[in-house]
Image (tube, rainbow, N blue to C red; front, top):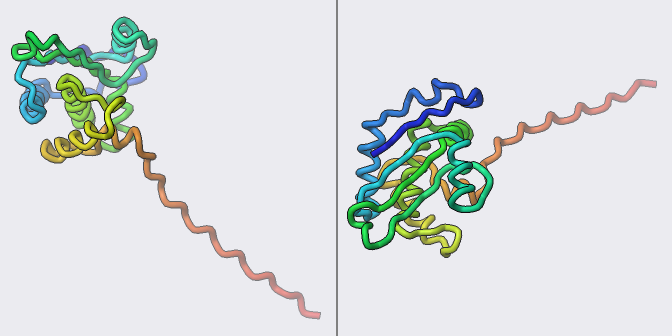
Length: 174
């Protein structure tokens, strides 16, 4: 189930969230969950930076907002309930704008990333296995740029305009 708790912050305009379709995100979540190989259900909270900061502080001891948090369940119940995800819509809106795709695509990217964490993968400790798997699944699920790739690789800089050639100095006639 997906719960959408729209942020009431002035920093993220309400129209940023207009493209979010709960039924569409629910269908994507089911497809992505199957592609990742998670059997149990996943609860998703789409909320604000303030809420993600609160959760991050309470569960990870980090006093800052983040884009996605994953909360896996114990293996004994993982067949029924794989875990919970929390996604900041404020951060998702900024990232979508920065990377030039829709808010809905950004939320889908974050859903996939969180599902991989629920599946036990961790880009902070592996040797690139999660990044490779996420890239493969991103292609399969028709998603834009991979979250791990864009965090670890510098963003492409616009090409610099060539400097105009200096005009030759004219010689004054004697």
